[in-house]
Image (tube, rainbow, N blue to C red; front, side, top):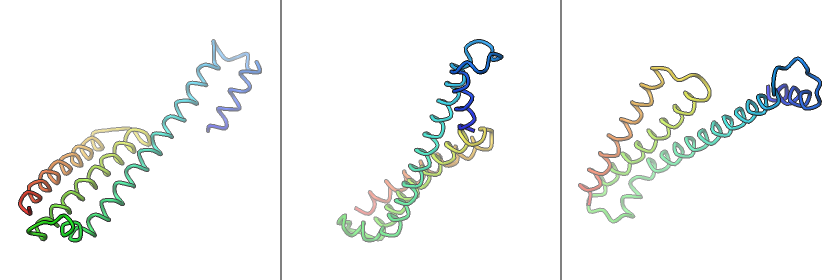
Length: 138
């Protein structure tokens, strides 16, 4: 699609499309730039969501070690605090992924809005639980 738009833009610059109304080169340039910006945001959002999700899985797997290194008096409770924090980060990653997919790949509708809201709710609940368990594990 971008190659077709580029070829059309080059023909417009060369004056090979006299049938194009007005300043068509400006319109096509803005379309091409919009596509590039959308792809950049899609890539950045996907990369951020993937990095957060992978990090959350590593933190979940090493929760007990992290709790022991933190010097918790109750490492089992502190490990669950770390795991709740990992769930909160994973929910943030899902929210980012849903937001990017809903906004750039397909159209946002009520279902994607509900899913993003549920991911946000999970993020808040898991974050509050992590703080509560962290305070209990001190």
